Image (cartoon, rainbow, N blue to C red; front, side):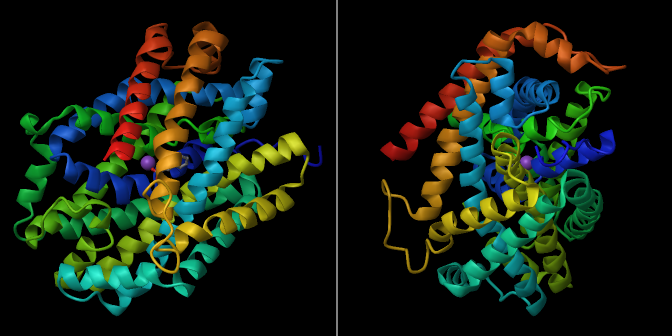
Length: 448
Ligand code: PHE
Ligand code: NA
């Protein structure tokens, strides 16, 4: 090997990096509109249950797999189950990181360009903002340039290393993100009429709960915590065995959940106060919210802060996606880190060109009835991620075994320890739950 393997310079560095991976477009762009579609507080309640029963055990498992092997996902499975095909699950994770990043970077690019659009001032009305957004994503140069810039920044961080790149950037950016979000929340909840938005978020109407509400709560819990594709295995592989796993997992999950709720608080009170509807789907953040900013006092400033924080959240997730693929070629193919970051990043940029142009020159190109952005999103979020998650949990429960998971997770832990209560969750409940989500999701998408 060219360079000795790095370790986080402190446990806080690890927690911030993993929280940075978790907190992303999933919290600020996706979570609010999924909450909006599923009736607000009732969804929030189910989501919290999914986080505790699924998110926590899987987070513990992935950190432990990484820490005990000190390897990328492929190497981790190889080390824990030598001479078996289980390494393919790690390989699936690497591939998933590759695909997710290629379109994640496109959406992050929209967010970056919206930083400047916000300063210039958004037009008034949802219709005008829908047109603005449509024009933006249908362009050629703009989506490609921002996708490119975002990938260059991501590559730069990964090339600089685990401590000097990832840890340094998350220690700088995560506090900024929280402060910016608090400012935008404060603006929203102090608008006249904001109370209705608070009620929407916090007083559950359980009559709105459908089977699919439960399924999307489970689906969101996996994506939002960066589970099922090796990002947390990879970050765990830079953790020292002296550091605590159970407590770190709680802090990471607490940060992710807290920021998702704050994102809801940044958006719904302001929307209700200014008289906008809640169920806009993916356009919520790029269409409805700009219209809200256009009518808000000092909306240019708050719009600027919002899209800046959205871009920061996306960056700290994107670096974890690239690190999965980079760690794989560094460990398994002996590439130097800088070459790994640059070559992999360049390929991911190219693979992201079709989704970047999905609404423009490639708007006629569809696969199984989906445009190129929906298609990338579908194969990664609806197939690869849950499949990787199910297989990882089955591996941990049935092959590596509960005793090994618990021994590793509890090593170095002074306070909280993991008990065998987790075993039925790992062995049966989580695999079954996630498998059902995956199958229903596929049937739904292909059938409807
Ligand atoms: N957790 C990130 C989000 O919420 C997305 C992500 C998934 C990042 C998988 C890394 C790995 O946006
Ligand atoms: Na998240």
